[in-house]
Length: 147
Image (cartoon, rainbow, N blue to C red; front, side):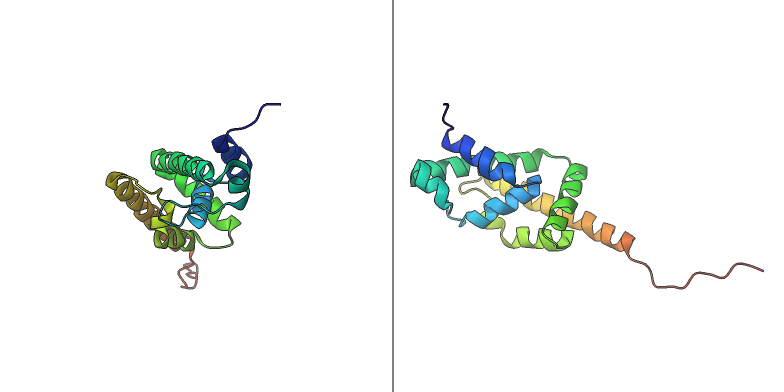
């Protein structure tokens, strides 16, 4: 029986169960304390605290890299699915990620990655605002037909 590495275990069993790329990033932000520590009892128990931390950080770097490399059009579709799954609007989902930006970034991320991440969140927010406005009725009654 082949055993999985801690990274493979976390990637396959934990992150594999979380749909959407931004959903995975949100999950990582929930288990990351913003100081390089991750809380996942099962991983620590099976692989040891330090090995589990390194594996989760590696997965975090991988997911953030994927987010930063994904075209905005695809991220917008991913955002809409993730927000629906969490029963919030796209803007609320993004607001949560922005508020937890320190946790959403792996410890020791380069300043460029942080700036790029914040720019992606800003662009997605602008797209989500435009999308929300386009989907709102303007409240004016329909015009009567010309007679």
